[in-house]
Length: 319
Image (cartoon, rainbow, N blue to C red; front, side, top):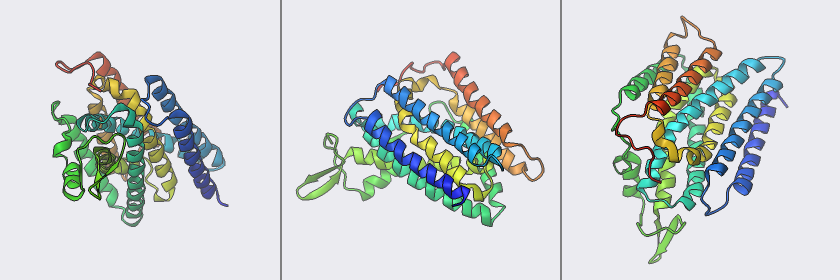
C-alpha cells in the first residue's frame, strides 16, 4: 500500500470516527447546544485538523512532508476563515424560517453533509481542469480578484435575503412545501401526499448556498495547492473546515454582529490569492507567505471589528 493510499485510509477513518464521536457524545437530539458545548466541539475539530496536519508531515517525513503540511494548514485556515462568512448567512436563513434552537444541530449536520458532497464534486472537476488546461489558473485568479474587489466594496446594508435567493425560488417551484409547524420533522404526510417542511427547505438551502461559497473557495485553494496530484490535501483541508462549521455556528451566532469588518479581511485575502495566481509564472511566492497573509488579514479584521463597531449596528443578532 502506497503512502497516498495510507493517508486516504487514515483520513476516511478519522472522519467516520469523528462524526460518530461528535454525534454520539458531543451532540444530543432535540437539545439546544450551549456556548460551552460549542466551544468544546470547535476545539475538538480544530485539534483533529491539526493532528491530521502532523500526520501528513510525519508520513512524508523523508520527502515533502513539511511543505505538504504547510500547504494543508494554509488551505485549512483559508477555508475556515471563508466558512465564518458562511455562518452569518446561515444565521439569517435560520431566523427567516423560524427554526427552533433544538432543531439547529440536526438541520446543520444534514446541510453540511450535503455541502461536502458538492465540495467533493467541485474539487474533482477543478483538479481535472487544472491538470488538463494550465490557463484555467488564470481564470481562477481573475475571478478571485473580481470577487475580492466586489466583496470589499459591497454596501454595509446589502444583507442576504433568503426570499430573493435563487435556491429559495427553485425549491418553491419544484418542491411540494407546507408551512405547517414541522415539530422536528422534515416530511409531513397530508391527504396521502408528502410535503416538505421548512426544515427540509433549510437543509437544501444550506447545501445549495454552499455551492456559491465553493465557487470562491475551491479556486482559492488551488492557489495554495496548485498540483492536481495532491487532491488529498485539498479534500482534507476542505472537509475538515466544513465539518467544523456546525460547532462554529453555535459558537458565533450570538456574536455575529461583532465581526463587521471580517468581510473586508476575507476580500483582501481573495485579492492577494487572485493576484498570486495571475503572476505565478513570473514571481513565485512560497506557501508560507500565503499562510502569513491569511492569518494576518483574518485575525486583523476580527480584532479591528471588536474595537471599531460600525455605528447603528446592534450589539447582538436575535436568536
